[in-house]
Image 1 (tube, rainbow, N blue to C red):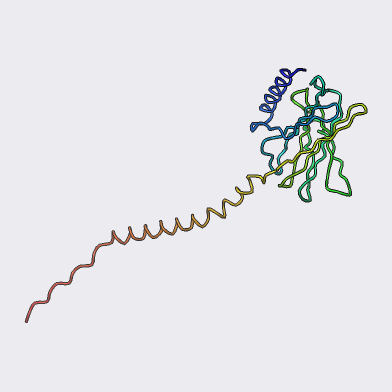
Image 2 (cartoon, rainbow, N blue to C red; image 1 turned 135 degrees about the vertical axis):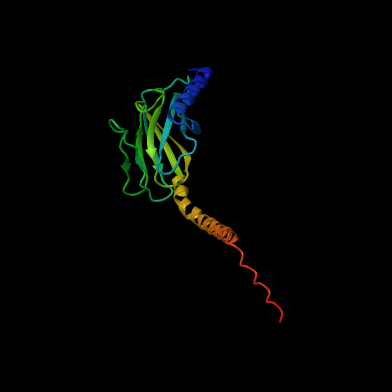
Amino acid sequence: MNRVGYILALSMLGLSLGDARADGGIMRAHEVQGPFVVTIFTASEPQQGSPVDVTVMVQERDSNDAILDATVKLILTPPARSLAKPVEEVCGTWGTAGFDPNSERFTVAATRRLASNKLLYAAPIKLDVAGTWQLRASIQREGDVVKISCSLPVSPPPHKLIGLLPYLILPALMVALFAVNQWLRRQSLGKLPSPLTPQARPAC
C-alpha cells in the first residue's frame, strides 16, 4: 500500500467511524516501531460509563500494506480504582478482560471481527472512571512485538448534571410561585369595593 493507499485507508476508517458513532473519532497515536506502522483511534470524547470503540490500524513499515494476521491487545490503566470492563455484545461476547491482581490494569483483545472496517482491529470498552487513562496497544506478529502508548481522557457523563437539575430549578420555582401568589393577592384586593364615605352630620 503506497501513500495514496494509506490516505484512502484513513478515509475508509473515517467513514466507518462515522457509521458507528455520531461524534466520529480522532487519532490518539501514530508511531513506527520495528516492522510496523501503528495508528490508534478512539471516540473524540469518551464518556464515563459509555462504550468507547478503540480501533487500531497495523501496517507494514516498508510497504504500508495493512497487516491482517496480527495479535492486538489493549492494556488500559485507569486514573483511579475502576470498574472498567469490556462491553458485552447481544449475540456473543466482545472479548474478556484479564485483571492483574497486582495492579488495576486490564487487558482486552482487539480483533478484526469487531471492526466495521475489516482492515482494522477494534474493541469496545466501557470505562467507569473519569480522568486520564493510559492506553497501550501491544501488537504481535510471528516473532515481532511492539507496544504503542497514548493517553485517553474520559469525561464525566452528562446525566450527572441532569440529575442536579431538580435541585437547581427548585429554588427558582419557589421564588416564581411566591411572586405569582403576591400578584394574585394584589389583584384580588384591587377588585374589592371601596368603603362608603360616612355622610356629614347636620349642624345643630
